[in-house]
Length: 403
Image: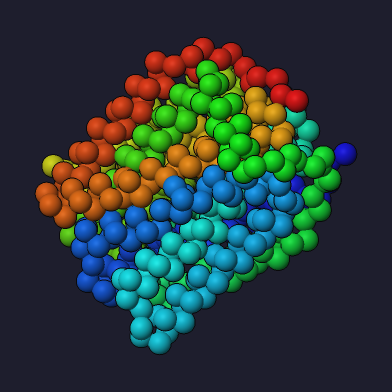
């Protein structure tokens, strides 16, 4: 029997956790550029450090999600993130904050993000019935996208007006609140998972996903998307400050447009999924991502605050439909006992983020941020071609739930 109050707690904790993450992620490069004099190479290094845990820890986190109470794992993950933010705040207040400390504590906070991101999709199917799975995913994403609207803009305003302390302090408080909400969540009991050798368990999950005709092209598309997106992310802040001439507050507004697009996409997701074939809904995201990258690249020749806003808006509006629809697809076709591991392999595709950030930092440092934006646009072209050539496009409706 599904718990009636567990899902709202999950949604609220998601809002608090994602708000903490977005404020921290937006504040870090701004502090690095404005207070520590970082350039494109240094911000690329920070992005690499903050995303490397997705590559290193996603698979172990998925194994844990299939072997221990998922609520407990998520609460511990938030506690780790809160600790990293509190430490960053203490260093900033003491005047000891450096690029190295920003990188190390950002990586620690990302460890919490990885465990939370792996476990939440595995927990959700036990909290809502199958027919409400897509709408529940949409509601979770709507809660999460609210963070993308307020987080970057708030971080930009706080860093610009009061410095790093207020931004990291607010993020730490939100993360601690998420941990408290998760600690009180009532997780329905489930049958014990297999406790065989970890490598055998991991191979079982990988074999299922890599042999699945629908999940494999989604995984590949997501890998390339994240690589390209973080090439762009690695250089955008110094590019926006130096090439577009934007202030910290204006940079925050352009990044917040990403969240506005995500909110609009999440609000419309139910209607779009009901009106269009399921496969068409999935491919909207990669196509919108390509359009967004081309608009942002256009600012190289036509520097414009509003073009940057439009590009980030498109980057949020279409890909949020991808997140909702592909998460629902994955939850539908994956047996319950594999959900943690399959979710982990999906999150491991975020391991391409440090690759993208490293590419962005390298290209930006050697050839300039403009060259990195063009590399990112090429990556978005590849990911759109991958999903359009796959059988995913031919899906008429959400598949039946696996047992």
